Amino acid sequence: QVQLVESGGGLVQAGGSLRLSCAASGRTFNSWAMGWFRQAPGKDREFVAAVSWSGSNTYYTDSVKGRLTISRDNAKNTVFLQMNSLKPEDTAVYYCAAALERHDITWYAVESAYDYWGRGTQVTVSS
Image 1 (cartoon, rainbow, N blue to C red):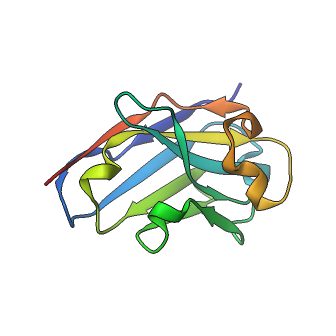
Image 2: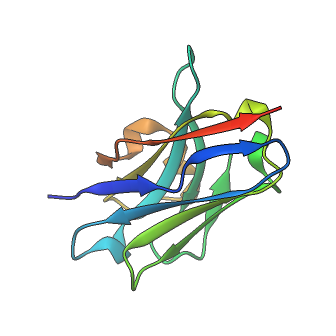
Image 3: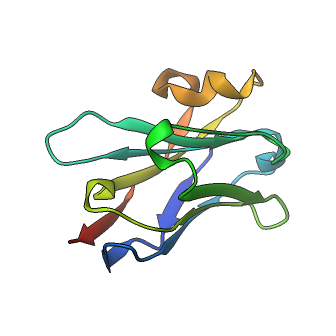
């Protein structure tokens, strides 16, 4: 059984930074692709970023390129989302997800690519 637990959310002013973490259980974390999604109030959940099993490949939605960075530490079974230059439109619940199958990195931009999900952490950016 895989469990994903997000942390690091909170309230921040526009232009500020946050670092989200997602701690994963499971012996084979280093073989999973990992992704971050977000869901703003009244909107569908959307893709934010993905990282390959090795960490060598990453993929981002256009609206976060240059501001958000996904990374992973396989020794600690943890994936991160460094969020800089935050905007009010980044306000959402952020979810991490794990994908057990290997594909091209762009494959992981859709929810159906993932097998396990965390419960989310709230990020609120004030203007």
